[in-house]
Image (cartoon, rainbow, N blue to C red; front, side, top):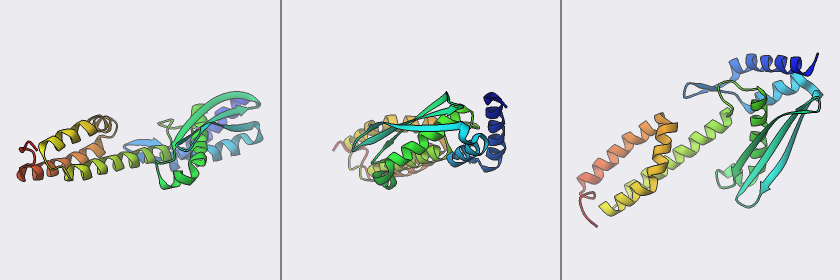
Length: 196
């Protein structure tokens, strides 16, 4: 069996596994990195070579590159960046998380993907980070004491809110409900009409 047949067979096997194990996020199917690695390794065995290298590492971030080879021929590359301050886990394991993501992305570029190159883990983390940003913005809005503060709040969060509105309309819709509530409270207290 030549390498193209092996790869096609492996990708077909992945599609079967992905149908039952993918995670649905905002009506798109995302596969788990562990499924990509497991099927690739089971199907291609030692003919598959996954090589990772650290591109950048300092006290703020880690960037890892993964190159995938089949029968010693380079077929795909994936990179991933992790910020050490993103989560408690990244404070101690940013390198490991970046490596895992880079491997997942390289395998996705090789064909081990369903609706997206991004993995379920990546999308879930992005949603969690957006939620934290929205919660922080709402918390700051609650502390607004005059119209000048309110205008500063709008300026500070405008681009982030526009980005989330475009990329995650469900989260933005929930934010909008709470924002409207808080804005009405501020208006009732006279906060938005005083010049401060």
